[in-house]
Length: 175
Image (cartoon, rainbow, N blue to C red; front, side, top):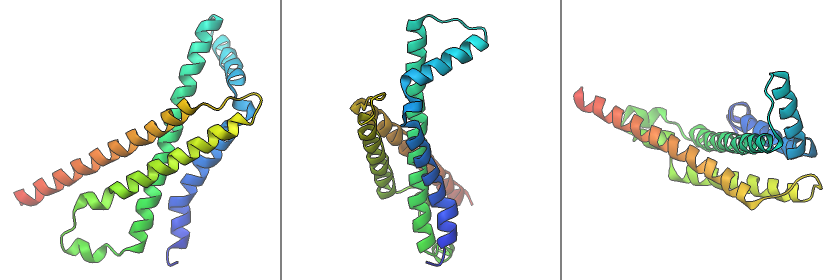
């Protein structure tokens, strides 16, 4: 492939880094009990004293927020990979001299669907892996949460692409 190095460094590497982070977070060391103890230590160091119920709630909220951020970022990386792979396979120099719909350069439903599907598959395999660990519990609600984070990301990027497209069309009408 003509652009193999660029494909790896710009598009595959971010996906692989996110997959490695998710795998590391899926281990015993990142179980709720361990993160709760680390959180308690950090809060005590900061002079904040919480009861067990409050600490458990804060730990849960932070862990679920971590799911949203992590899987949202993973879905974004998948989307960039799919878009970048497409761009590298097609020469946009020629179409740009003509007229190409800006939205199709930034976001396509196929890319969004595949990015969400890949995110779902990683989330499901992560939860299946956690089911095999004594200190972890696999939870299908987490798969739904992770997949919804991906859906939010592709929706936001789609909205931004549509906005860019709209602004681009306004400029071409004015000039």
